[in-house]
Image (cartoon, rainbow, N blue to C red):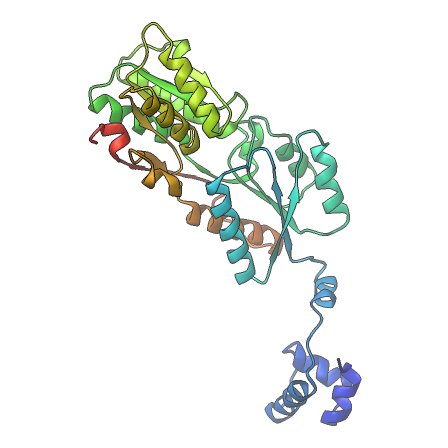
Length: 334
């Protein structure tokens, strides 16, 4: 690739003039500007992105942690990741995907990326209650936006976008009550997940609102996979007074429950959460709650970019409502 000096010689101008033209600066005549740009094109010169990044003291890269355990079969995070890549590239940025093993020291992973200046900031997902990443990144004054909350005091100062999971499961329970159900169970994640805990809260709030009793044995906590849903449904149906309806914390768990009920001849109403592609084509089609992933990704990328470039952010917190999509699994119309 030609140097600035070689371009200057070919265009019969000084190297400083070439630099001003390439950076769109200075009081350069249009005739000279066009002559320089024509030589640039003819000689095949391209600007060094790395050099520009060094001048701006930015890597132009966002970091995003991918948890092998939590992200296994997670179409919501798949779509979120795709949208982040697409939106980041629109702003001339890239996404660095790195693994975050639960056995590793999380703080050291993030510290290493910060100290090496490989990223300008982070987008977080899979947030936990009292998530330590919030405290570390806030105290380190590192830009970040979370898809989810930590349900702690750190949420006040952090930038986050979340789906109102409590409102979603409240709507699911209310829908089941409207269809005559009073014995409604829940298949939930293990305790500690911020979004999972919020979905359980919505379930409990809805039972209280509709004056239905809360039974501890009606809340079964399982892993986020088909097997977990299958085994959770089995546990519920072995109770002396099994439920007539089940609210699942995710579609994948709901699909496991549907399979168990179908195999054993139980006609139980089921709802999921996420509106994954499989939900529409299950038998019966799954009633579920759709998350506005496109809007979430747009807000996350926009707020992170604003922090990095020093722009003012009007709102730090966005709690978005999910949309209840009613299908045959809850109406039992099949």
